[in-house]
Length: 73
Image 1 (cartoon, rainbow, N blue to C red):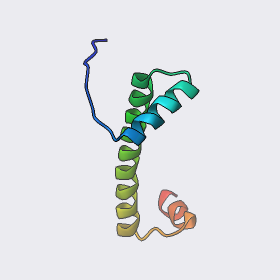
Image 2 (image 1 turned 180 degrees about the horizontal axis):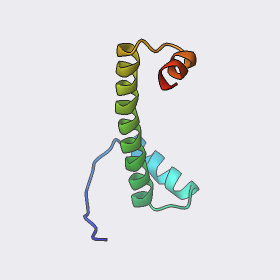
Image 3 (image 1 turned 45 degrees about the vertical axis):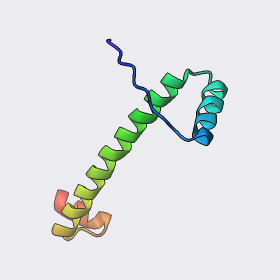
Image 4 (image 1 turned 180 degrees about the vertical axis):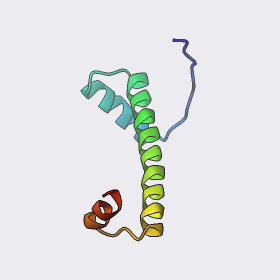
């Protein structure tokens, strides 16, 4: 896998937390930040999925698990 180097700036307090957390978890800062970005993407995707689910439930008048059973049959 090819790598790209990305330089970022963060407030000093966050830099200290990154260093402390990476050391405590025996990870490099790069590993820690890659993991944080993967979690960010996962959460973003699930937020979109949940919003779609809410819209669908509202449109289909689904309010309870019984409503889901009724529709799913």
